[in-house]
Length: 68
Image (cartoon, rainbow, N blue to C red; front, top):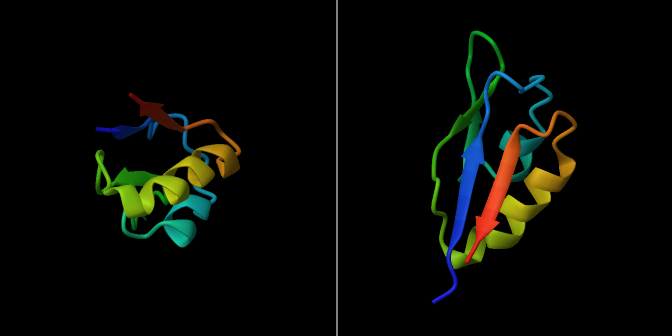
């Protein structure tokens, strides 16, 4: 079975919000700081492409995706 795991580094986040706008089922933003909040570290297969895209789009490198 193919698994995808998402991790975030809120300290590296520059609060652009691309992740929350692109994949709101996986990411949100802290209302006070704007930094990333991870909602689902192991999203379903239907969200894998969105998770990968968010990692690519993140200008700060705050999102990592691991697949096995």
